[in-house]
Image 1 (tube, one colour):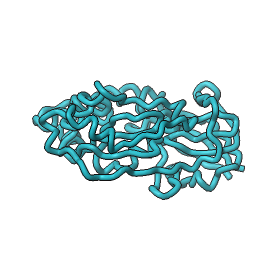
Image 2 (cartoon, one colour):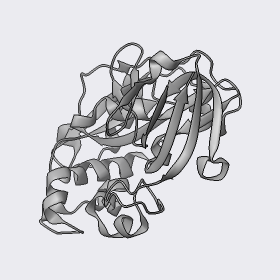
Image 3 (cartoon, rainbow, N blue to C red):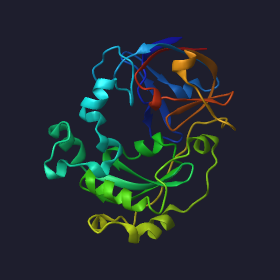
Length: 264
């Protein structure tokens, strides 16, 4: 069975365990059903997710021109504290920026490789946590725009990490922590502008991933360099697919690659 298309981040369904789907233009693969089967991935080409032209991918699935020109790749995406739509100030496209920035955002704590603080749109809960490979997460602040979420994250990451160690996450080397206790510990460091939006009564969300064998020493597949790979699928976690020989492939980091996937 063969599938061909442009890689985009895996779509998920919040079940126990999480259901994962690779979605192409005219077809899709339910990866959970492919566990213990051999998957071959072959690089066919590259296609920008924005302009759809067959051009080299620069970053985040975009060609170089789109990455530096389009609002979907503005600096405020990765650094929400740089958001300015609440001031009616344009970065690249004010209409787009208002649509994304001026909606409810969540500041959260997640436990993937360690406890980390992060920001996401409310509409992306729990998808964001799933994408990060978090086994548990909890909302701590819900604010009306991206800027307030961003300055809250900046304040809190002085006391807690905002990064995930992908190797520890994939190896399932996770500390057992109490996120409610962490929330209370960080409460006093929330900026005064965001403090009225503090959430003090919600519970942790627990996430179960479809993994039959965790890699002891994860090694990342560079498809641009290798061109093709074949291995037995043993799990999916975060945006990674995990193979029996400890090879892992980050779908999100390879968005825009045109691939052919064969399943046995």
